[in-house]
Image 1 (spheres, rainbow, N blue to C red):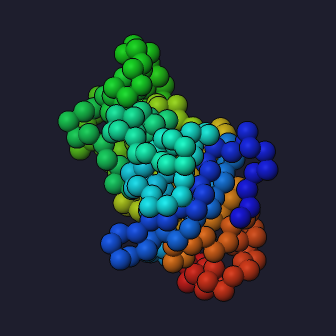
Image 2: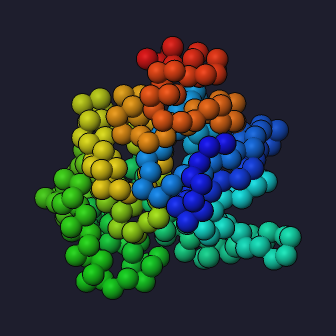
Length: 260
């Protein structure tokens, strides 16, 4: 396992994580440590465990063994002696309010406008002042290029616009890290570039990002670290030029030969 040497610099710390769904062992002992301000792209074939790993980072999926820490905080559990006790729902929701998550299908509230979608979580999950949250939301929607769509409902927006609203919603929480689960897979091809452009700008601004994607060119351009997963394991990880241009493991070579 490679990763930051300075403990204070670690924002995502995954140790020995296993996850099964019935007899299907999906994650088979994942170790991953990521720096603040880093951009990590997770690649791998369908069924390799990429999205499941992402969902364990904010306890959307409970781990069977191992631990996940974000910014030093144990996610989903509290340790008492040598025993881990799962947190109550309200406590987990509070933890999630510091972990942005952008879903592949946008997951906006259909009955709320773009502005209301972004304002809702800072107020309900973080107790922020409405006027402050409103001003913040307007600035964020402008930042991602939909400042003119404040009062539109999701059904009035294109897929690319909906995804940009979802990114603004994640940013509104001022999270320690933002997780993206295949953020362009539900988009028409001509809209992919605009969403990747927003993510590219976030990376340039130093936001900590973890992105599951099939966009190899984007990974090469934006990522600090590429993680290749297969069969529930991290097969190899490193800088994009190493993993994409000079992979050391046969499984990585085979995967890249099919997608490049």
